[in-house]
Image (cartoon, rainbow, N blue to C red; front, top):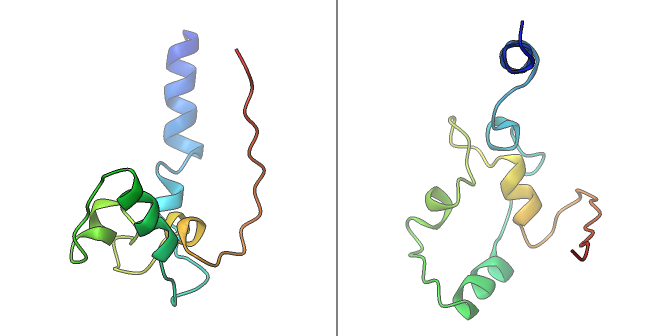
Amino acid sequence: MTPEQIKIRYEKKFIVNEYMLKKRSNSSDLSFRELRIYYSEKDYHLEDKSFETNLNLRNEDGEYNLLAELLSDRNNIPFIFVKFQG
């Protein structure tokens, strides 16, 4: 098998694609005020009706997903952001 074939087989068996979009959030009471302000400052105007749909903030069952929890005003997901030069 080529390295590419191994990678494809591994991904099909062990990796859940779009995990953050499919996994249900631990909280159902989320707000996105800061995110809306951020988009507004960048001159992106998203309509209230389609905001959550356009940003994929709900899973297939209509519940908030992990991406929504991460982007919400109050989240309990610790993460470290590092920016490298070069």
